[in-house]
Amino acid sequence: MQVLVLGAGILGVSTAWHLLERGHTVTVADRQDDAARETSFANAGQISVSYCEPWASRHAPAKLLRWMLRNDAPLLFRPRLDWQQWRWVLRFLGECNDAAFERNVRQLVALGAYSHEALKETVRATGIGFARLERGIAHYFTDAAALDGAAQAAALMRRFGIARHVVSREELLAIEPAFRPFAHRIVGGTYTASDESGDARLFTEQLAARCAARGAQFLFGHDVTRLERAGGAIDHVRLRDRTTGAGRSLRADAVVVACGSHSGPLLRSVGVDLPIYPGKGYSATFPIVRPEAAPHVSTIDDEVKCAFTRLGDSLRVAGTVELAGMDTSLDGRVARARCAMLARRVEQVLPGVCDTRPASQGGDPRYWAGLRPATPTNIPFIGRTPVGRLWVNAGHGTLGWTHGAGSGKALAALISGDRPAMAFRFLGFDDAASGRHA
Image (cartoon, rainbow, N blue to C red):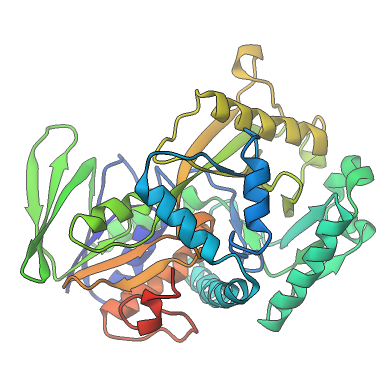
C-alpha cells in the first residue's frame, strides 16, 4: 500500500517506521523543516507507563475552580469564546467520576505497556541513542493527604499489573539522593523501577532518518491545506510548499492524520468530529553546572505538577497545562509567570545544580511551549475514521512520548489488516469507542 502520513512528530514517525516494517510505501508531510519540531520537541522526557492517570477525576472540578485565579496553576482553564473548548470541558467534567477514571486508566495502562515494549524493540533494532536513562520514575509529595491519595492510586495501578510502590522519604532519598536539599519538605513518595526517560526529539529525529534510509519520502516545509473527498473516501490531499508557495496534490491508499492538536480542525473539515483540544504545556531546559548533584531518576513534583528529567548535561523541567486555544507564545503575562515558576522550583528543589539565570543575566535557559492534543478521557484516537482511506493517530495529551512507539505500531497493524493484542478500544473497530472512548 501507498500510505501518506500527515505529521512528523513521534506519532507520525513511529507510524511511518512500522508501516515500512510491514512493507508499505510511505510519504510523510510536515509543515516544519525537520521531524519533532512541535509537540515532540521539548517535553518532560518521561516514558511513564506507571504514571498515566487521566486528568479527569472526582477531584478535578474543585481543583480547576481553585486554580483559575492562579497564572502558574498546574491546570489552568482560560475561558474563551470557543465552542470547541466549552464542549471539551463539558465532556471532561462528565469523566470526573471514579468509574470513568478506572475505565480510562485501564486503557491507558494497556497502551502504555504495549508501547514500552514497542519502544524497546525499536531501540534494539536501530541502536538509536536519545539520552536514555533506565532508572525508573519517582514521585514525591509535600502534603500528607496527597500522599494518602497516591497510595490509593498505586494500589489501583498494581491491580493492572504496574509495580508502583509507596516509599518513605528515606527510601525515596536512597533512590535519588539529589533531592536531599529539599528533604525537609518531602513527606514520602512513590516509585516505579520499570519506567524510564529520554529525549523524544532525539529519538524521533533519528527514527525519521532511518525511515528515510529505508525509502520513506519526507516532505518537510509543506502545509496541509485541504483533505479532498470524493464520495465517502479521501481522494487526495493538497499540500503547499512553504518556501515556494507551490501547491501539489497527493493520492494514497491510506492517509494518516497525526498532526497533534491540529488534527481536530483538519478532521472536522471532512466531517470527522473528534474531541481533541490543545493543552499548552511548558518546559525549561537548564544547563547543569553541578553534575554530581543532579538527579538521574526522572521525578515528578506533586505540589506544582512538574517533572525533572536529566538529559545529558541539561535538566529538563516541564509541566503545567493551559487550556487556552492554539497559542504557543512565551511573551504573555501568564506565560512569563509559568516559565518563572519552573525556574523558581528548580532552585527550591535542587539549589545551585543548574544555571537558571535569565539570558539578561548571562544565563542560557531554553523555554518552550507546545500544544498537547488532549481528549476529555486522555485516551487517544487510534484507528480508522468513517471516511474511507482516512486514519487517525492523535489525542495523546501529555503521554505522546510514553505511547508514541506503540501507537505507531498499532496503527500500522490495523492498516495492514491485523489487530494488536491489547485491551484497547480502537477507533472504527470497537463500537464502544464512539461513546466512552472520548
